[in-house]
Image (cartoon, rainbow, N blue to C red; front, top):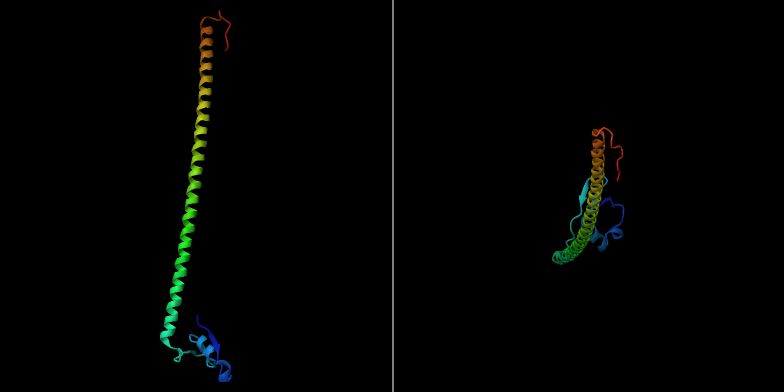
Length: 143
């Protein structure tokens, strides 16, 4: 992250260049009165080996935390996946049961319609016999 600061030439050296300020401003970009930008260089008083060791240790810790978060995230995804698979299986069983019930209901209606059609055919056959006999047999038995 780069910070832009106005020219601080009007402040005394003691006010803003304490060691903490210098350490915190290593990557700060200054804008002077002309608008040109100047990058403040690294502090040569710091031991670069120690700074590098601190950065490496911080990086290791960050990577360790990142792997831990990723492992937890993957674990949560696996649990969610198992839950969804169980729910899917339950819904599939319910769908299959409903389809079977619908099929049986359909077959039951088909049987009922078939029986009605057979009864109608019997009546037509009897009516046809009556008409062929010239109406001599006027009684029809209806079941």
